[in-house]
Image (cartoon, rainbow, N blue to C red):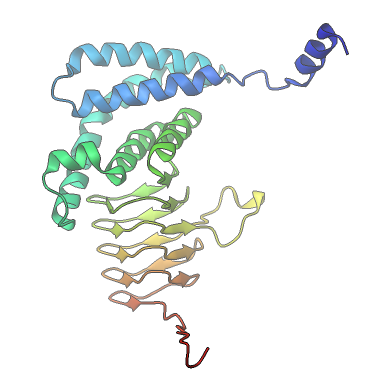
Amino acid sequence: MDHKAIIAKINKHKKQPNLRFRLKNRTETFTDTLFYTLFDIETPVEDNLHVLEAMFEELVDLACWESEKPCKKVWKNYVEKLPGILEKLNKDAEATVNCDPASLSIEEVYMAYPGFYAIAIYRLAHELYTIGFPLVPRLMTEYAHRQTGVDINPGAQIGNSFHIDHGTGVVIGETAIIKDHVKIYQGVTLGGLYVAKHLQKTKRHPTIEDNVTIYANATILGGNTVIGANSIIGGNAWLTASVPSDSTVFHTPEIKIKTLSNA
């Protein structure tokens, strides 16, 4: 097969007219700039908001494929929400300082804690998601996922003072609801009981009430599953049904120890 024929075949199979990976790269740059604007004391807020607006206009041009949707109005609405998002994120950082005896300072949380970074990008993405601009928020949270190992869908609803410790392997699904003062550890999954395309518009993921702690590698599945307030879910627990308030749930493994005498 000659060179022109190869090119023709490749072009024939490039079927997605809106698939521009430039959008992914630009979203990552926008996400970094937004994070620095909110948190870095040396980054001028006023100047950077102008930079971010120009970046966002490019994202709109790349990602808003349906011309009848008013994507151009999204930025103004979004900027108005930034102070409230920052206030929530400061509460998240304070929750981490108060929960984790290993934290030396709140500055360490902002700069070095993957759980906080994942929550920050989730909160910044969630507001874009709720005002009807879905692809860019998904790219933002996937960028955080790649860096931290924490996968939070931008559609999830998460309350105040949320703490993720360690973080790696955490999965929080699109329709999960997490209320205030919740703590979760590495490997926790808040997922769907089963996967089917027709469930797209239904609540597929669990609800976690106030003051719940979920320890490492626990799996909680199903849209009707509610973990009651003030409960503790132990490590490696597997739940597909609701738990009342003030419960303690734990997994008891069977442990067998082989020695030379009974091997």
